Amino acid sequence: MTDRITCCTPFCKRTTARSKLPFGFNEWLCPDHYRAVDIKLKRQRATLRRRNIKRIDAERYVATDDRMWRRIKKQAIERAAGI
Image: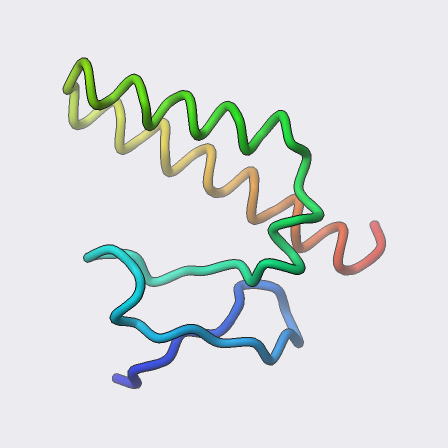
């Protein structure tokens, strides 16, 4: 296992240190590709994370956060490919 994680976007050479990511995270989008994602999706995920601090329903939160991350990642990859 390496100590670096590459950007999820295909053919992107940017990496980050594994130690900078929270425990359990193994995917990352570089700032260039994350910036291409709609602000609406990023705000929805941020709202979800803020609400989880107040109410903890772990299984539901993890499932919803994972679904939001997959949508963000999909959109970043599509925009990088020009789709």
